[in-house]
View 1: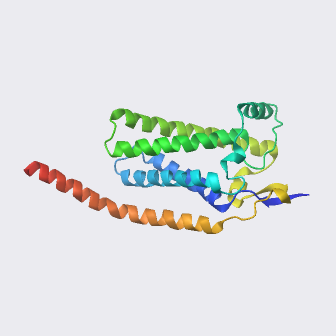
View 2: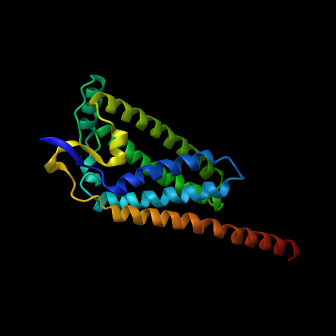
Length: 221
């Protein structure tokens, strides 16, 4: 008998929403010199979150693990055809189309974060700055396609996937449920992110003063 069961653990859900908010904030502040520190703060947050997700994808709960949503090209094509026919196969975890979006977002997020750090550190030249911007826009495009896919799947399956990523619950058999939510880990993630957001701004005046002092020394050296 099907009922509401736990599918998404707390760390996976928190990662999802924190990544969405951090990327959105970083993207919106990317062209503002005045908001540069906020842009950097959120960029580092994106990098840290993706680092966590890569580890959790190996050791996490059943539906959070990468092996649970590794699909062949044939399976992806079959799923896309079923979407076009408005009769898609139901997946309790990520479906083949969603899995592609996830892997692309993780890869593009890493590229964007790495090139952003390199650009800020004056490493690599103008081409890295252009790659940083291009990967950010590519990531935004994938986010748009992902959102459209979530809306379409929710309508076709008559299942609110956004709510599922909030509550962690979907309709399924009791035997398919994960055993633990790992709420303690989500709480630890919140504490670490909050601590970083408090600590990072305090480092900026020191860095700015060091740059100013270096410029002064160069002028009078």
